[in-house]
Image (tube, one colour):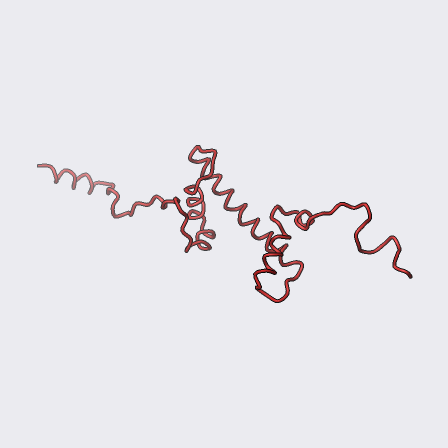
Length: 135
């Protein structure tokens, strides 16, 4: 056989170029991540599946953080996500908080937290203590 048949691999004459991101159904750029993996010299060789997998993981993490931050923004009746919403989203999620425990988000603030010792006591003892304070 001469190899000029109709079947098999190879580019088609009138076919359009389809990106690897589109083939994988991703929004993140697989080609750019592949280039960064090669230029970064993390390994001598980079497989074809590695940038696709890495792009999928990064896209999932971004989607998760953005969804939680969007919920935090909606809770505060805002239509725009600001660093405070990112901070609240990450710190209120157990797994994301563990993953980003050493990360400082600029202008993120802190979680609202009042220690139990500082809260006023409830019950009879609190009323008696307040009454005994009066002269």
